[in-house]
Length: 98
Image (cartoon, rainbow, N blue to C red):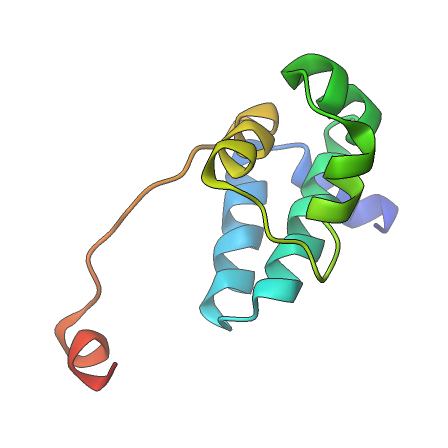
């Protein structure tokens, strides 16, 4: 993570906007890498693991491009960064196209 991005991602509003932008592409691997960027900006995987009672090794795997986090793990990662999971309705055009 560049120093500039690192500084921005420490702010939950900026981190939220960053993750939202990555989510728009629908690329799950990119989202996991972006989550790792956010975690690194907020203290890193070791601090996250200690704060949330998770395994560092599992977190490194989970936040890799091939990761597949559970909802519980995703929630803990987001909470560590001052964020939370939210569900919003799709717009009608997008819902019908799916």
